[in-house]
Length: 91
Image (cartoon, rainbow, N blue to C red):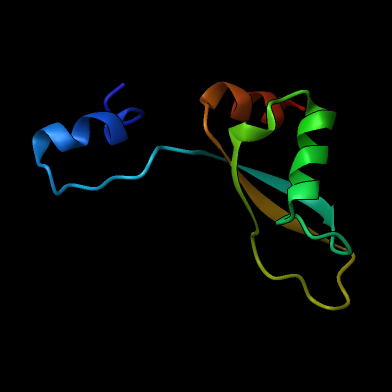
């Protein structure tokens, strides 16, 4: 509970303390490199296909910038809740 809610209670410890909200990353392999996973359209489509609220997706980035010749790469998606991250991991 403390780690998950650190952004809520940290100001009580010290008014100048700044913490970010905890996120839950999921590594997704075999993503076609001809799409841009950082776009709003990608997030919307991903949320629709996986039956999750789009606002659960905090961020998306390539794990490593794909090579020009690569057909697929891996992305890291960060979610607000552990439950959604687990759901995405299970497919």
